[in-house]
Length: 463
Ligand code: UD1
Ligand code: CA
Image (tube, rainbow, N blue to C red; front, top):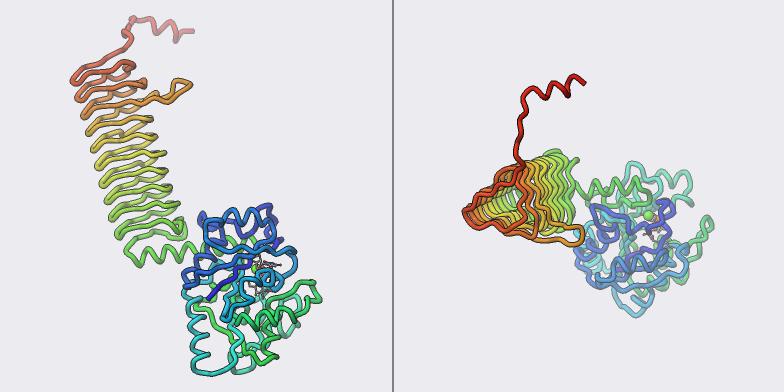
């Protein structure tokens, strides 16, 4: 089967400079979900109809192996949009799925079930099957096309748009999801025969249904598994609702695989994230991009993990940010730590509160528990980084690297001026400025003499 995704419309109700279908749900364009769901529905040949801001939309999906078609008049209506892709199906003797680009909740499973349904009807009923329309009953059907059927059957006679519906038709709660499968040759025939709507001047794809049913090409309705699947995103509020539903489904997917998520409504997990079982996620945490988290790791409240690989049994305390970095098994981060830009924290290391680690290797069992900046450095196993230690990696023009050998002790408030090498088992006294290489086992101290002048303090206080 082939599929056509409609994404040429103006998205007027979004009031946006950005094309509606590029607005994001969990870090991915809305249209990405539609295309992904179609692919999960076992359809690989996909045409995308673009029109409004076509270049931007095509650019965003250029690597998705789609065939692009441009609708010249993005106000032409959904049938005009399908017609602009007619080369995709005009000589195709089979069924074509058509789906609105603003329907990100229709699942791949439902798309597979619709195809199965077509197959069954054709195999066992021997009718001239024009197509299938995906529908659902909504408690509030306002805004959707209403599905008019032959009483007591699933034969669809007509779909009437809200704007054209009579008061009685508006009371129908079965709505058109904007997902159809049509037999291509009859679809083309219908598209050439329908007339623009009197209310809007648009050519409605939904009018294909009435044409077909009058011609004796039966159109059947197929009920979505969950009514929420049919939600179309026309406004930013509907975007928020869709995002919430998609997110909860995704979290449900992970809980089914042994992940604990506390207060899931507050947690953000993007679709490319992958989690092992016994991961535990606390309220307000966000897992983004291609983040992976290993078995038994804990993600504390308010932590944000972006494009990072977290090993097993890692403990990430509250309000910790990890970006594009790698954290090995058993490490302990945060609360309030920041690990970024290619940092690599080896197993068992502790990075505590108000410690920033940038593009550095933190050796096994390193302790850097409070208030430090570690940038462009390589720390050997068991190094101790005292409170207030700063790696001065930037001289105003260039970044430089530092190396610290295993078990070295960097006393509180010492300043490590890169480029520099500090030997293993060396001891840097607190407050030292280290701007020369230090051999193994050395003791290093640089500290202005401390003067204590008795009684003189009074003079300052008396002022
Ligand atoms: C459409 C259906 C309605 C259904 C609803 C489900 C029609 C006439 N109506 O209404 O029955 O209940 O979807 O969500 O189809 N588009 C184009 N070119 C155009 C116009 C639209 O490509 O000229 C695209 C849009 O980008 C969008 C999709 O088609 O992705 C649907 O268009 P939209 O205007 O949102 O249709 P609805 O009014 O929601
Ligand atoms: Ca819509």
